[in-house]
Image (tube, rainbow, N blue to C red; front, top):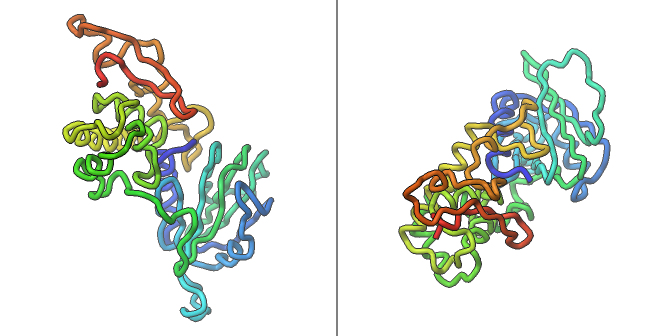
Length: 295
């Protein structure tokens, strides 16, 4: 599933082209994905100006301004909400010469224009686990309510992490992946962050000390920043807004490396009890760690 770096990669590609563009046409080939698509509300966005492209957790939000011909008290600002699901691809084509043929499993298109350019935003999803919805300014959206801290917000810090885990028996990796507490840290990056912090991913969260909590915050942020810079990770389906794959998977220290030497201590003759990267299954998700240097 695309995680925060993948969604942020798509957002960063779309934002410069879409901000300031007008949504001129929406084409839907179906009225549902994982959830029903509110067709009337989506089509009501046509004619609106895109003011920003944001990310909240793993959701893309395309903000739109009210149409100037509609009274402000009748139709306020809103946003198109896009979720990539397990295998969704959302990409942008600028100034297409001809409308390109629909691809297999392509479910919707949005045409946007500026005085200088025309843009085509396309969505393809073989498994149909993604979502297209509308967030209305006056009504909290059910998919956004109850989400936890963003990893780059100042509220996510060692003091908060330590205090929030005092009575938690769940594994620290599971805690980091709990979107009601911290958003956007999926399976790959939780494993990588624990390795960087030298914290065993199966360790009960309540037993993580303050110093380790500080290291985990740094580990989470560093791995996410590096993944964003590399365009995310492409293990199977993901491509960015320009249809290029991510490359961070080439720099993973533990994820997918079961049985291989630890990058930190596996090649150190003085490391003592050297062990290869271990793979276990935690709550149905593959988890990787070094038993020698993660405690």
